[in-house]
Image 1 (cartoon, protein in one colour):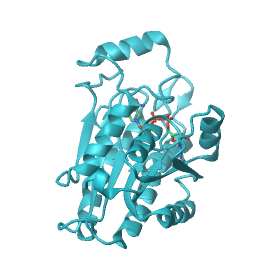
Image 2 (cartoon, protein in one colour):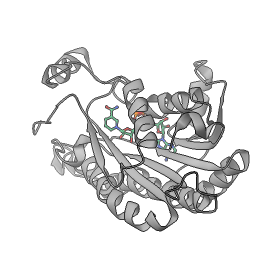
Image 3 (cartoon, protein in one colour):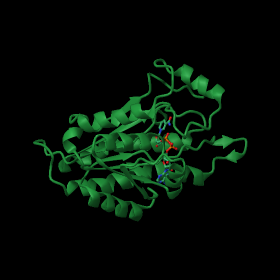
Image 4 (cartoon, protein in one colour):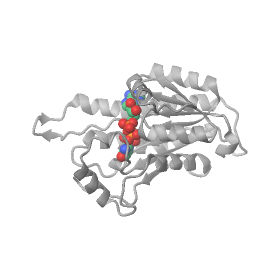
Length: 259
Ligand code: NAD
């Protein structure tokens, strides 16, 4: 899909009030798309208080784990402009060992992580796809829309303390090919991006020593990725009509060690 030709068509970006989602929302808005960002009310408030809300993006408070709220918000976004792009960036990254100093891993924390990162992604993917399926195709291939999910290199190399996060992102990776196959008859492509380390508010809690250590592990370039580099890859995934069912690592060659 040529972003320039899509013009004001609709795009949804979850987690759009921070980090990768905010950069993606800005990227798609700059390409002329009608962008609706889904995020928690608290996330949107934080962004607005920091004066970082994008003037061309509509922010809608929606918890991606609430399927009814997702359905209503997708319909609202599609009412603004026919939906062609949906990008799942909403996520959480808790850390706990399965048997740690404080005892056994909290099963509730495990379930919450799967619910936000995997089930939330599924709700948005499914309802966005249902909306896209009702649109006219944009090209001779019969293409109607593109969905991009966010996995993580933790899907493949979960580190110590990342059991819940790695399992949730492994689920996003596994969902990708199945969703692409399911939605092929509707002309909807599905891909995922597995970032390595990107400098976003999710990462800002780490101390400088750990930051330096992480950067030194990246073969090249030896730094964190910029959120804009993630957003640019989303744009490439939308524009390249033959990319489908794939999880693409965006990691500077990083392979995570056990800890
Ligand atoms: P971030 O914390 O800056 O942004 C995540 C956003 O998701 C926040 O605005 C938050 O409010 C929102 N969110 C959380 N739970 C939600 C819910 N239930 N409903 C709606 N919104 C919700 O983090 P980020 O670094 O931009 O991460 C974006 C995605 O990229 C996440 O899925 C994360 O796991 C993934 N990722 C990030 C990195 C990295 O290094 N930053 C690496 C690999 C993968």
